[in-house]
Amino acid sequence: VLTQAPATLSVSPGETVTLSCRASQSVNGAVRWYQQKSGQAPRLLIYGATTRATGVPARFSGGGSGTEFTLTITSLEVDDIAIYFCQQYYAWPPWTFGQGTTVDLK
Amino acid sequence: EVQLVESGGGFVQPGGSLRLSCSASGLMFSWFAMHWARQTPGKRLEYVATIYGNGRDTHHADAVKGRFTISRDNEKSILYLDMTNLRVDDTAVYYCVDGLDNQSWGQGTLVTVSS
Image (cartoon, rainbow over all chains, first blue to last red):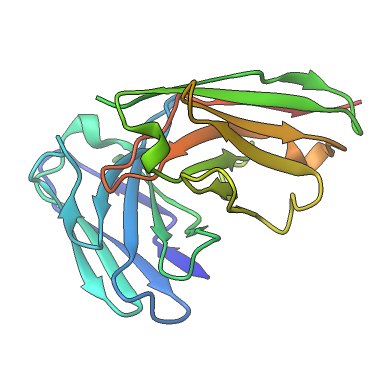
């Protein structure tokens, strides 16, 4: 089971935000982060807990290991308003997803 | 650039059937596992099924096992999901997902199961 926190985060442009994803047992760094904007498919941001996907801006960074993982958005832009999901793929199949964190404007 | 284009979604009554397709380009299709995932109206993401490059080895989520079947045509670079005995809680947007590290998702196709 993956638990994301907080459920909703209200932010201002320029802030640095950190999203949390906690696994009920170790997933050994096999974590992906996705960004989903309104009306769009999920887009891969991070895989292997820390590796940015192709084309992802450097303001997105992933961290953590074992059971605790984070996604940090440095100097958030308006274009970053979205729902963010984590996923584990250590014990797959099946994948499991967190319930998502909604990042909206304050 | 990988492109995944789903089709085949629609409105169906409980107990009905649908076949989803996903046309893939920009990757050596037969080299990679391919997956289906879905997103419920409440925005929850769920794993549905995986098929490995050889087309023989598959895995289906418990929620769909015995009702859905994943398959692929490596010659045509097409992924399929055959869905039978559909239930109201199968209502979701269904996404085709590739098995690369730099994973791509299709745009999704909506399946609505309702009486």
